[in-house]
Amino acid sequence: MVFTTPKFLALFVALVLVGAISIDKVNGAGECGRTSPNTMAFKLAPCASAARDANAQVSSQCCSQVETIFTTQSPGCLCAVLLSNMAKLAGIKPEIAISIPQRCNLADRPVGYKCGAYTLP
Image 1 (cartoon, rainbow, N blue to C red):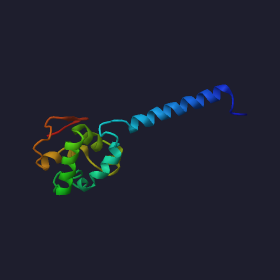
Image 2: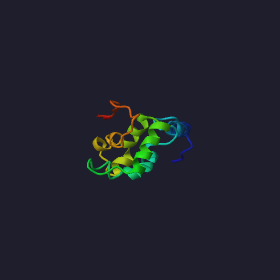
Image 3: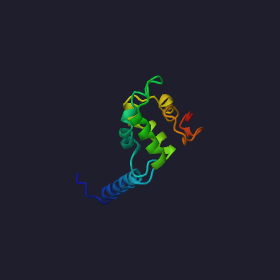
Image 4: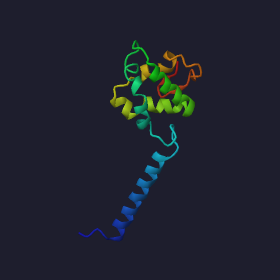
């Protein structure tokens, strides 16, 4: 069977176009601009223990990174990061991680902001 038939070529072109559009959406302006939430999750590495344990102390590096995301990105970006696949793989508990801005005493945090099934305290 030769894969040069017009139907195969049309299907191939359609799949390439769908892939290009999907990649463009990923690279487009999402919750975290052009950076994917999974990539942004690496910036919150200093928050790992505080995002798993509500009694863990939140480091100053963690608070600094969270504040940077709020000021340079948006609360939506932080939500996307906390609910990302990378955060899940790291064992982050969103119900605990969502409390980090409050635990950091960030004055400008958007209290009441909905983050998936969670609300920013």
